[in-house]
Length: 270
Image (cartoon, rainbow, N blue to C red):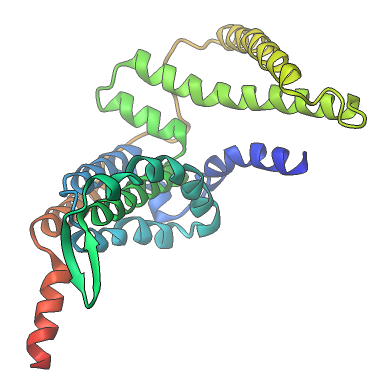
């Protein structure tokens, strides 16, 4: 049970990291959101057999992690938590795409394995960039940036409430798991039938508590507008940050730097 509770409490680690005071944290959320979206769009635009051209893109999230002084362990832990989704998406590619595209000595690599590796690499790059964005901006800051960039307010509010009420769901689940553990002797009451009843009760209790939270928000003057203590302002730093990284993304999309470096080294060794 201790492991379950520790994993549940770990949900808010990105919000805690977002309270930092580095130069990356102080950037306007809109600049970071637009730059991250440009990064994601560029990465997913590559073909399914391209791997080497994707490798230089690790520079963007890695540079932000270093500049913001973020601990790598929590980010990698959450990346690995979502990795099975990408794994099961591409794990069957080697079975359907058996055309040999690469020959390394006596070892032949089919297109299915290459596309599988490309899916995993693109997943790691995009999800890691999204985690770094939240860890340097906070989920509330990302939602506020979306609203200021023209996203429908109702969509932004639903996204924000979904994230906030997730903690309510986790809190209620933790209470129920602890109560069941304290009332279970010799493994009794731990079957699937009891778990099904607990899931139904969890839904009802979470809905009831969410309604009370929403009523409390209305009593305190909530009018549907997201507010932050620090006002948003696009300045020179934000423009340089967005344009500089976007230009680098376009360059890396048009030029395969690892391939050029390999050709250059081959010419030198001749």
